[in-house]
Image 1: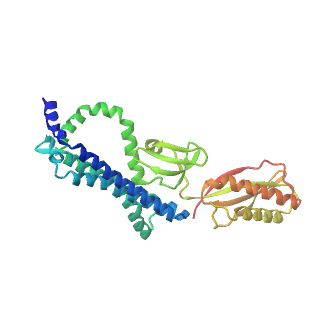
Image 2 (image 1 turned 135 degrees about the vertical axis):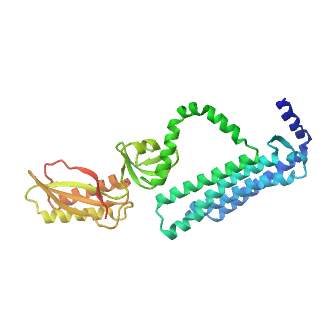
Image 3 (image 1 turned 30 degrees about the horizontal axis):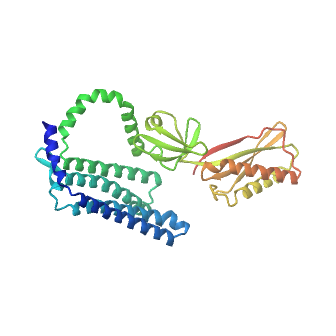
Length: 359
């Protein structure tokens, strides 16, 4: 009976003119064709690297917006005099849900999604810069704002199309136990995601170590966190794992290389120290990822059997340059020692990525 009623209410589609549909698609193609033409012209005019990275992506996003919503608005206005656009498809609690209402609900969700993303990308950074808010807090505020707006948009859209919340609540309560067992890990990760976003034990842009693997936090979502490793791709870690396990965070620490060099007894220690410092300075010139201040530090670290131990520390902005800088320093040290006839001791050299507490 219900199927018969829905089929009866869909009979209005028989009155849709094929010619009107064809003309509508022609107009829609003109809209998207105009968008593509404008974008082509923009790319021809603005060819600089800065424009390709900033202006053109922004212009393309705006043009896509205009084309997408322009087509939907065209559809509504083009068929605004047709009864079938406003004819009820079904009724819920006295609400006659038509194709028009469904389109409005769809536009609310998609427009809310695009607007909140644009707001977070272009408006919020102005406030962040004004109040010197760090990158981790920015990310947290953006995610919470996005989720809040989208929840409101979805609830409003479902209300427009007559969504029966009581019926859904009854179904969920009936299936709650089964769903609870099946989705307990998802729920745990969701709650852990909220804890990470609010308490901020780790933030986007920070270097962390998980199970012996170091990487930079790139995304914190409600279910998982993405960590970009320096050589081995990206780790997608369930948030529950980050909350329940030991994770080393390098956010409050100063990262630096620590290269231990052993020279033989009888070596002029002042001369060796000066050569090591010169090699460290030369290795860091023009290199990205190396902090300019404080400068490299060379320390006469220890005296052991048959060797004098020196330590070369170079402050790093991030750990990505560790191996490159250390390799460069070693080459320069060996070359400098050879030219100045300084003998390396019969001692195993150790290289470690050390972390000394920041000021």
